[in-house]
Structures are given as structure tokens and as C-alpha cells.
Length: 241
Ligand SMILES: [Fe+2]
Ligand SMILES: [Fe+2]
Image (cartoon, rainbow, N blue to C red; front, side, top):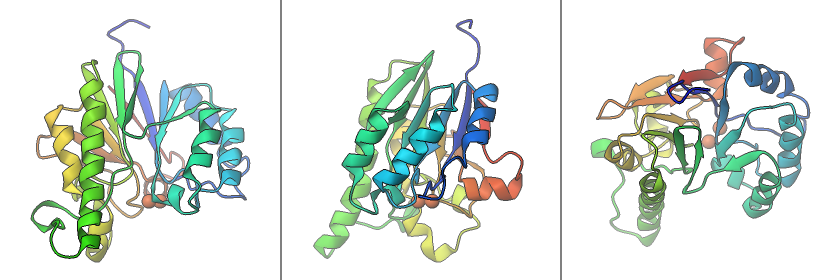
């Protein structure tokens, strides 16, 4: 491929692989191997964060012939076996980004899970009870880890993977009452600071597919549930960068 050729990025979030999913994603992975150069999995990769679920995905990923990069989502933490799940993925072709980065051709990928806390003027502030402060610190920490990963990228094109959304726009369609649990504006700062090329996230199963940061950087919600409703034949997006 020539240096100036664009990279075709396929992205899906919330595949929620469970113990009954064996073989479920094989046709999709075969299709994406033909249509894209790299696949991003934007969290909630497993349904309950069980090693058995991770093994099922690894089995299905044998049908994928392009690189695959992902971040964990909240569901991947449910069983408290994240380290075990990480180890299973480490021995497979799926590379998990967790405040880390990956470079493929001329594009750098930086990823973290992210966290909630709400948006813009309505963000939760670190004030009052220590549990509230801990909640806010988790979002601040995730934003800092994303900033660190982005700062290490020397590529001009920088793609961000998240599970939680950095903007409220792609959450539109969800109940307003749960917005604080869907993402945090704190995640948007490093994206703007490093002029990322594009951002992909999941988690907002009932949101809308596209929005942008305050600096105009495109943000794609790639939650499988939402994409399936838009087009059952193509439950993924492909973006060229
Ligand atoms: Fe999900
Ligand atoms: Fe989620």
C-alpha cells in the first residue's frame, strides 16, 4: 500500500459475547476482513467479563484476517476477572488498549475505557463525600491516561478508542436521567488538545451514530445495538482516515 493511501477502519462496540455466542460473530469477522484494514472493538467485548466468554471470542476471531484493537467496557469488569480476561486476549490477536497505544501503517490508536460523570456544565464535581470524589477521580484519571497515550503518538493521524462517550450528542436517544452514567466531558479535553483525527465509542446502546467535539473532531457511536437498528445488514461502520 502507498503511504498516502487511506486506512479503512471498521468499528463496533458492545458485542457482549456471552457463553452462548460461539460462532455468532464468525460471518461478521469474515465480512470485515474483506472490507476493512483494521477492526476496533469499543468495549463491552464480553457480557460479564468471564474468562469463558473471552475464550469464545478468541475462537471466533480466528476468522478475522485483519488486526483488531479494543478497549474494555464496564461489562468487562463485572466478574472481577479483568486480569484473567486480559491474559486470554494477550495470547490472541486482540490487542487491548488501556492507557496505551498501537500504530498501524501511518495511523496511531490511543485507547482507554473512560468513565461517567456527566457533561459540560452538569458534570459531577469532586466535592462532598469521599465516594463522590472517588467517582470524579476515576473520570479525571481516565482522561489523563488517554492524554498520556496520545502524547506518545508520533503519527499525524491519531484515532481514539473509548467505551464511554466524551460528548452528550451521541447519547441523544438515551433517557436524560442516565446521561451522567454514559460518559464525561472530561474525556474530550485530551481529544481536542491533541487534535485527534476521529473518536470511536460504544456504551450508548440507544444513542445516535455521530457527533463532534467542541473543536469539530468527529465522534462515532458504534454501539452494535444502535447500528443494527439503523441497518441490520451492516451493524458496523467503516471510516477512512
Ligand atoms: Fe454495552
Ligand atoms: Fe457499557
